[in-house]
Length: 256
Image (cartoon, rainbow, N blue to C red; front, side):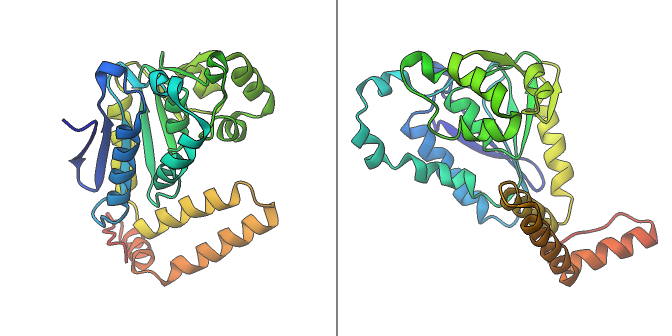
């Protein structure tokens, strides 16, 4: 049975589920390769407009496989090219919503931070505890966390390995929404369905501009935003959206 399962629960939405329950969904090569293959395929699928990334009702991803780490040498990281596998998520052009229940530790927290929106169960457990096993975050755990919650909270969390709840993640700005335990997936699917009903080209431009502008000087970022805004006036969806608004009807967006 595959450790990464892709389904299509509603029109326009794909669900990517990590299923390695015997290891609390820990990230081994099979999982990493499965995720990369899934997202590479969905990037080319014009019927899919948003993706929900999830684990199970009790664990998102508990981290990397410590048994594998025990035997790993520096050259192994180079040969495995793990950063290339992460790129499939980093450069994914469509919105990704992570539905997090239970543990999202180490690589699991980093995986959630590759999403555009994070929906967390109230008592989900986030953290970057790598320092406790003699290493440090290596897939964005210092840099993405820093950009999400700021230097001083990040330093506390990565230097101590301290974990924090879904509620705390929401309060510090890491989670987009916090929901009662057991309902993160349902809420993430609702959000994905709403996004899937929006004009795909506008959605793609929004994601691209936010990502590109995050670390750019404000003037440069505003130029990117302005150009993308202007470009969308050449789309059929922009005309459809305006007509539907004036006609007081629901728009039908085609991605053209």
